[in-house]
Every structure is written in C-alpha cells, then in structure tokens.
Length: 235
Image (cartoon, rainbow, N blue to C red; front, side, top):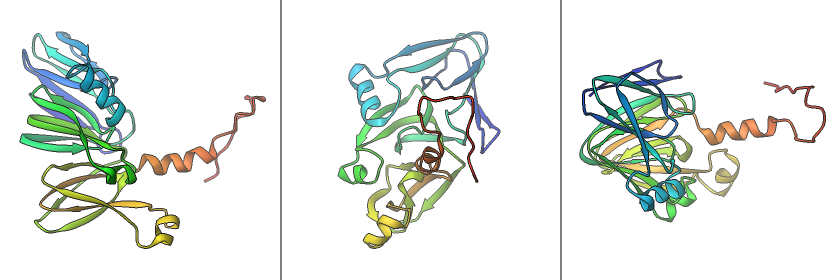
C-alpha cells in the first residue's frame, strides 16, 4: 500500500494505492473517488456494541466503509472540513485521537473508544477518545494545518483542548485552568491540556469551537420573514 497527500495543508486530499486483496477502512462519507475494481463493504465495524460506543462517545460514524481491491487501484478520501491530512505508521502501539480526526486506517488497525476520565469531560473533549492500536498505517485529518510536537522525557507542553488532533499512548496528559479564575473565564482560552513526555502530540492550527463561536452570532435570525433580502457579515 502506497499513499500520497495533495493540496496540503488547506484542502488535503488523500490518495491510497491498493494492491490486489489489500483493504482500507475509512469513515463513512470520506470517499471522494475510486478506480474500477475497488469494492465497498459498509458495516458496523467491530460489531454493534463497539459501533455504538464510537458513535455515542467518540463522535464517529456508526458505520464504516471497507475498500477492497479486486485488482490494483486507488481510493481518494477527504475530511469534511477544510484542513490537513497526515499518515502515521503504528508498530504495535497506541494512538489516542480526538473525535472527528480519524479518517482511515489499514485493516490491521483496531479502532475503539478509550475512557479518559473526568478530566476530558472538563477539557471539552468528552469522556471518551478514539484509541487506535495495532500495526499498520492510519490517517488523521484536521481543521487547519497539522503541527507535530515531539516531547523529551520529563518535558511538558500546553495545548488548548480545541487544537488537539492526537497524541501517542506513551504521553501523559492533564487538563488544567489557564491561570486564575479571571483568566479562565475571560482570557478566551478556557481550559488547556498539559502533556508530558516522552511522546509526540499533533496539533491543528484552527479550532472548530472558535470558528463556531465567531460564526453563530453572525448568522441571520430565523424570524420567518422575507428570506430574499439576504444578510451580510461585517469583518
């Protein structure tokens, strides 16, 4: 299996070349195109219970698509939001991924939900993260570009919770306030996640929460009136 990522980092497109009999599992709705000879099998990956866990707690689709190559061909995939895509090779290791950032993986990768404790609830990431484990390639997406930060043993690094894409299972994390109460309430940063090494963390340069906070107040009110007048957004 070979792959290429084009149009980075704003409108990334993942193209995966599959040899005969190779398979790729991907989020429902991620497919852009595929060549002749590629078959698609849609199912509840891991069974009903695991799929319900991923949907309810991990923010992912209930169904997943598995692309199988009856003969050599390729599949192209893209995330729902404008942003980046990266490939990460797992070698019998774990990767924890925020909801919405998983795009695709080889069939040898197990996808499950991981309870992160109450700290993730207060960090705005929900009680569960996606846990990818096994050996093979996985592909992650983001809103904005993706930046990798490598931590040495004992080193700490602080990230806004809305900018986290993924982190290695060897990395510890803890959710904390930004300074005192006034900073937490009025700085616009809220809570942050403090990572400690050894391990790698992947960040996204844009936050969907921040974008929605800007967008929603500028949307027109649904008053049921004449919708032909349009609306404007002031910059």
